[in-house]
Length: 150
Length: 206
Image (cartoon, rainbow over all chains, first blue to last red; front, side, top):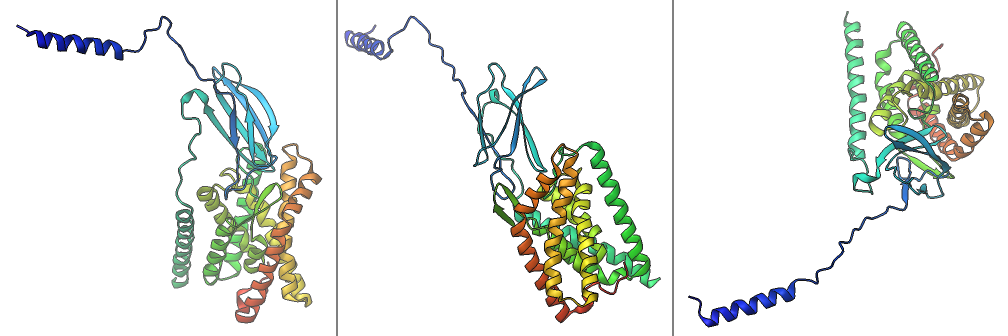
């Protein structure tokens, strides 16, 4: 059987645990964040911002596209807009005298500051391009030397 | 000054490809039948490599970002072979650097290649008339850029842009590039004439 000492310890422990439980509230609280502002950053390869570029924002709902905003970027290549209520998917097209790119994104998809696209470091691209040129030159030389031998 | 994918309509893109490929094919056929191309392959490759990398050199002035083109230099040093050389350079640029679009390689080739050929003709004409090569080189280096800007404005008419407005804006932002390329082309030509005059294609009849 339990000794009176162990009963006392159990009793104290139960009282302690009741103290630790936070006050039970009658209403459950719901919380949802509202994303107020979407920032669009535009820049050229090399890092210069696209200043005063035309920007068109299309709201995509159930696969249907609708032009939402047409404006220009500011002096830092940034543009801010407030999302349309209930629409979380947007397609943004930015263009400036012959340069153009677009991106489709979903606000509900989580990570908001989307990562910049991972790409090979620049020097790798340069070296591979020079490699192609050397290869083409070798190819051309091979054919012209064959012609000369004949 | 590259035009990106999706800016121009399908028709303009197709016309660009047709013009670029037919001019390239004609030039290759013409040079093959008249000259020994094997000797100039190293020269063409080096200039293609220079053209390919040059577009990474940025100058940021005003609202847009401009980069070196070197099309005037290619024209003066390579002659009409500059056009097919640029086709190779532009293809590599669009795949590796995402400069310009893949569908617009043809139209970009026309935009930069035809000014290169014009620069070559002007240089050859002036050189035979006895003008200073340094001055002619500087002039043609700058002219390559200016003419490309005019071509850009011409192509952008099809998207509803105003010709004069775009041409003026393109010329204005490219003024620093024109100065830099004028200096580069002028010094390269002077240098080559001193050490290896046979590298310059002035005895060619095309």
